[in-house]
Image (cartoon, rainbow, N blue to C red):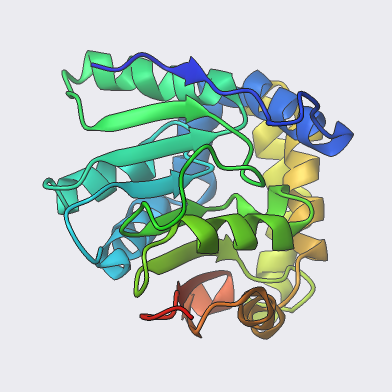
Length: 250
C-alpha cells in the first residue's frame, strides 16, 4: 500500500493563510472524524454517500479527491467505484497520515493514494482524472478561482467536479436554531472534545462568511465549467454542487 507522501508547492512557498489552515487541521486531526460525526449528528455519512453517487466518472481512470483529509470521502469513492483509483490530495499532512492509519487498521488496500499538495497547484497533468470531489474544503482555499482552474485543467472532457459544502451561515435556518448552534454550540463542543476552541471558531466564522449557493455556482461558471447545478441538503445547511467540464474543448 502507498505511504502518505509530500509534494512541495511548485514555487517553494506556502501562503500565510494556507499555512495557518494546514496547521489548524494538523492539530485537530486525531479528533476530526469523531467531531464530524458528533457535530453533524451522523449526517456526514449520508452526505459523503450522496457526494460519491453524483461523481459518475467518465471512465475507469483515477478520481481526484481534493482536500481529502482523513480519507473518508476517498474510501466512499473507492467503495462505489472499485475499478477507479483515488488520488487523495490535501495540504495538511497529519490529516492524510491519520487517514492512512485508519486504512491500515481496516486492512484497506492499494487503490487510494494520499499525497500532500496545494489545491491551487495540482501535481497532475491536464485531462488526467475521470472525476473530482472536494468535501468541506473549498472554503479553506484562497483564492477559490485558482482551485477551480486547476480542477478544470486536470479533469477529462465531460467529467464532473462535485463540491460538498456548507451553505452560507448568514441565512436563518430552522427559525435561527441552526445559526445559534453554529455560533454558540459548535465551538463549545469542538473545544470540549479537541481542546482547540480556535479551530471551531474558525469553522463557524468561515461558514458565516461563505457565499450563498447561487454565488458559488456563478464562480464555477466564471471559472469555465460548462454546466453547474446544486442540491440542498438538510434545509440548505449543506449543498451539493455538480460542475461539468465541457465534453469537447477547442
